[in-house]
Length: 440
Image (cartoon, rainbow, N blue to C red; front, side, top):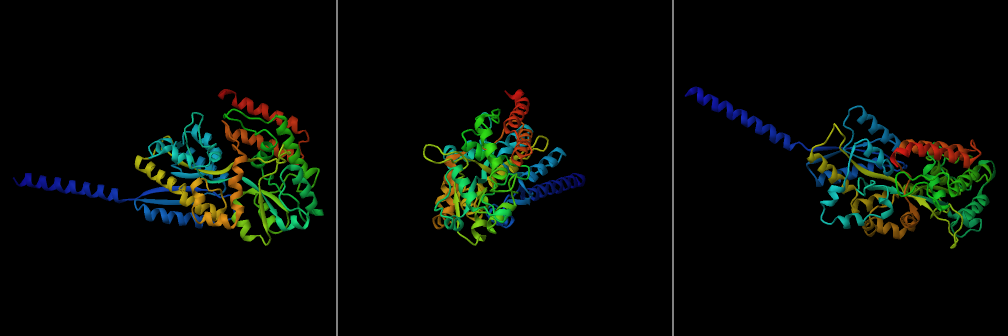
C-alpha cells in the first residue's frame, strides 16, 4: 500500500512538473526577428523602434527583434549568407520587391496568398494597394508573395529658386526641356551641375529604367523571361544617358553617386537631381530654398508634349520559412500579424509622412499625418500621382545574374568606357537570353 501511494505521489509530481513546464513554455512570447534596410538618410531606426513599441503593446505575446541590416544589397547578402550556412535567418524582412524570384527559387520564403484568401474580404484588401506597387509582388501563376511597405519611385527634385531666376516657371516635361534647363543652370568647372542622375556606383539600372520607359520600351516585359536591351528605344535611352555627362556636361561623366546626390542638391551644388521619393522628407527639411518636385521627364515629347516615365521601386515585406528551418504555425501567424501591422493604412500614413516613401495603401492618403502633410506640402503627392506613368521594376529569372550583366553594361556605356551602346546592349541581350533559355 505504501509503495502504491508513493508511486501515485511521484507520478503526480511528475505530471505537475510537465504541466508547469508546458505553462511556462506557453507564457514565453514568440520572438520575430525582423531585418530591414535603408536607402535614405533619415533616422529609420528610431521610426522602426516606435513601430515595434506600438505593436508589442497591442500584441503582448509577440516580441519583435528589429535588426538594421544596411543597404538593400547588404540585407539580401546577409540573409543569403545566414540561410546558406544553415542558419535560421530572419522571420520577416524588408527586401527589394525585385528579390522575389530569387528567394522563391531558393525555397526561403512563404507566399502570403493563403493569409489574404483567409481574410474577410481578400479583394478589398488587395484593392487598397496601388496596382503599380503590386507589379513585382506576384509569381508567374498570379500568387501574391510579398507585401508593399517602403515603396518608391524616383522623382525629379529641382531648386525652384534657381529655375525662376533663370526664367523657368515650371519643371521640365520632356528630355529636351530637361536638357535645356540643365544646360542653362550648369556652372563651369563643376561649381554647379545642372542635373545629377545617380548612375555611378555599380547600380545604374533603376535610374536608367526611367529613360527607357519614357523612350517607349521598358527593359522588362510582362513575363519573367522578357528582357529588352537591344530595342532601338533602349539604345536611344542609353545614348542620351551617357551624353548628359560626356557631350552636354550637365553632370559628371558616368553620373553621380547615390548617397552624395541629395547632399549636393541641398548644398546648392546641383539645380536638379533624380532621386528616390524616400529622400523627400529629408530634402524638404534641410534645403534652404524652395524645393520643386516633378515627374521624371526622361523621354522625348509625345503628342501632349510630355515624356514621362518611371519604374517602381523600394522594398516589400517577406515572410521567411526556409526549407530545413521551417517555422511553427504560431510563428508564421505572428509574422503575418507584424506584416499586416506595418502595411496597415495607419502605419503607411505615418511612414509616408516620416520618410517621403509612397504610402502603398490608397486609404492611407485619407489619414493623418499624411493627409494634412500632403495638403500643406503638395510635393508629397507627386510620386503617388506619377504611378500613372510607372512600370514594373526590372526582374527576371536568375535576377541577380541578369541584373549584374545589365548594370555592368550600363556602367560601361554611361561612363564612356564603351562607346558603342548598340553593340554593348546586343551583347548583354545575348548573354541574358542564354541564361533564360531554360525558362522559356
